[in-house]
Structure formats: C-alpha cells, structure tokens
Amino acid sequence: MPDPSRPRFTPVVLAASLLAPMVGSAAETPQIQPLNVAVIKATTGLCNRGVWCHVDKAGVWVPKTRVAILSVSVAEQAEIALYVDLELSTRPEMYQCAGDDANGCIFRMKYAGPGLYDYGGTSGSTYLGSNITTTNISFPPGYGVVVPAGTPIYVHLDVRNQSLIDLKVDQDAWLYYVPQE
Image (cartoon, rainbow, N blue to C red):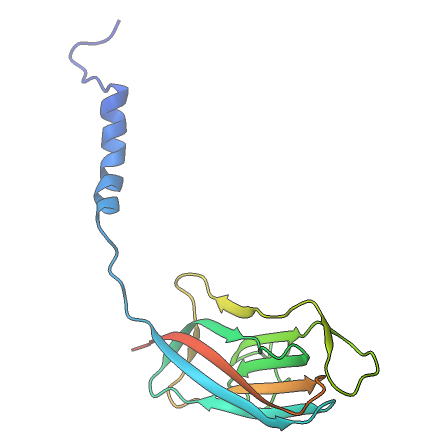
C-alpha cells in the first residue's frame, strides 16, 4: 500500500520534469557566427595538349591573422579531358606530405575526365561520361586546420592535358575559415 506521506510522481510529472531543460534550449535560436572566405586563384598557365603541366605554388593566399580552416571547396574544370592532381598546403612544393610528417597539409584531390575516345581524328573528340562535379571537405564541428598568421597557403597543381587543344588551366580553391584570437 502506498505511503500517503511520501510524494507521488506520476509518469506525466516525471516526463515534464525531464523534458523541461530540453524545451528551454530548443526554443533558443543559435546565434550565427561570421564565416570568412578566401579564394586562391591558381593556374598552370598555357598547358599544351598531351603535356604534363606541374606547377608548385600555382596560387597562394597568406592570412593576415591566425585562422582555422573549417572547409575547402574546389570545383572541377569544365574541360573534361584533363587529369588534375591538386594539393592545398603550407608546404612550398607538392608531394611533401607523408605519414606523420603532414603538418600544414590541408587538402588533396584528384580528378580525371572521362575516357577520351581516340578515333584517329585530327579535330573533335568523343567523350565517354562526365566529370562535372565539385570536391569538398568540411571538418567536424569544433575542429579546423589552424594556420599561423603570415604562413602562405599554396595551391599546387599537376595537370595532364589530354585534350586535342592547348588550354590555359585555371583552378580556384575556396577556403572557409574563422580568425583565431
């Protein structure tokens, strides 16, 4: 038999007491924090057909303050007969990131256009498929790649022009960051 002097908690009262802290926090709208964007313009310059065009420091951005990079976005080229290997790092040359020695290494991507069907023609191309995509990386909430003020961030490019024409290859890398105090 229940003790009348002891307070009784019904399931409704218990549920309301457990949910009260969540209702208060859910009603509050999180404040939007400013996010900065830097765009690194990179280029190989003119890349002749059938040639590998390797350019270390193809583009550079030097943050004026210490920054935490939260996300990176690199759009692929519309020219679908390119093979592109792109590295974004504070290293002065490409391919220096390895194993435990990856300090300053931010982002790496590769893309290759679809197969270029060579039918022996001297003009025009037949492509198989498409490569019109964008490559992104976002770090988990609360994490970012921290780069000290004044440290250059480079875009390194290694491009093979498999097109039937000479191309000027331009590649942008978008960095989304917040300043660190």
